Length: 160
Image 1 (cartoon, rainbow, N blue to C red):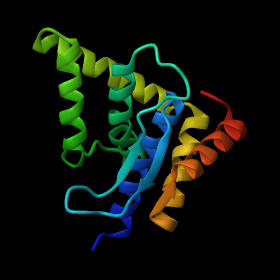
Image 2 (image 1 turned 90 degrees about the vertical axis):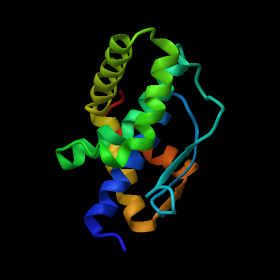
Image 3 (image 1 turned 90 degrees about the horizontal axis):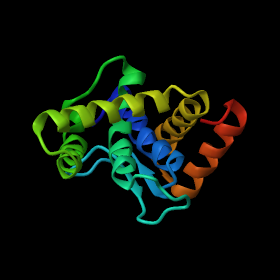
């Protein structure tokens, strides 16, 4: 059984993935904080795009990092252990782009900084808060609902 605090942390983590996916033009199918044997929650991002991406690999890495960054912004600390699956995928993508270990680390740091900056935008952060609140209340929301909350947050609190 999970505690209310860990449920909220998971909700912020998954909401971070969802909001950054939407902000970067990727559709979201669903967002859930219903745990299974492999993970505490899931943001299912679909393959298509509703807006072209200048750098698809960068988009994927930022979506992966967004859960960790949103969780850290909510709690005040990075939950590296809980984000191991995301971080393994980030490393795999970074290795595709960078030639050396130092280049991999530089790329990861640059994309972490870029993700952190995106999450400081008022509309973006409000969307994460709104989706996290909804996840705590309902445990799962559709991609359509996530997009609606995202668009409302941008209208109410300024776009990115």
